Image (cartoon, rainbow, N blue to C red; front, top):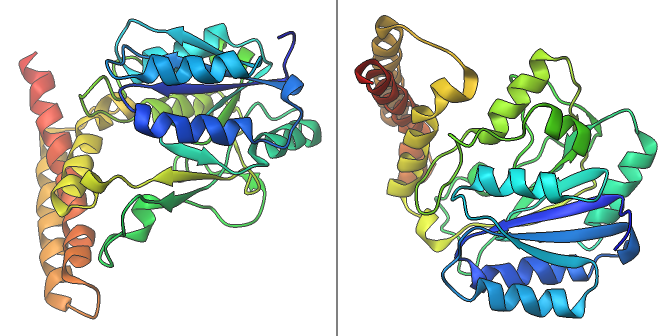
Length: 302
């Protein structure tokens, strides 16, 4: 297709069972299909991702598929950015489902604010099984409210499953750091945040657009306290590279001690909150600090 305004990039790895739902939601968009394209980045999937992708590509002229051989979500996202024909690049996860007016709302915001080059919207949790009562609602869903506004980078962030970049801005700052982000089955975070930190330092505004909504899967394996602690640990382990901060040994030790005290106090305080949710609230900051501490020693050794 020629000159789409928006390129939607869907990066995928071994999630064929979920990918079809994401792609179907993009087929059902209310915006004229001639105004956007969908680029599927197959990141070395070993399931039937290629078969499912080709089914959509053969049926919809604004869909195409590209294989990225360098393993990692950041590599895949950067490849999508380079290949995009659109002026704006919209990222959505392969386990997310876009509201039917998602791209319409992106296009409307671009028309209202052509000066804003980076923006993102909320996501709502969905699951293929019942989400436990104790599961922290803030983990599966994210919102900054109902008001369109600039976000306060450093305290607020947009999220990878629902974010848009002007192509020139994305390429100028070299996209996402390939040292961060999921890579095959390796858990890693921080690539989106690091790029936003760079934008903050360059005084580039980032907006929150509540009208552009997606649903994001809470997978079964994430509905465990052990997974939540592991995710918090991995966030901490990536934090130094994400924020470009070099903390002292004293800073790490003090933070771990403070987290232990706060966590114990939180648990002793009790209340009506389910026990597992209380555990998560009390000790996930500790897991993050332990991850950062491990990263500190890994850096020292290397």
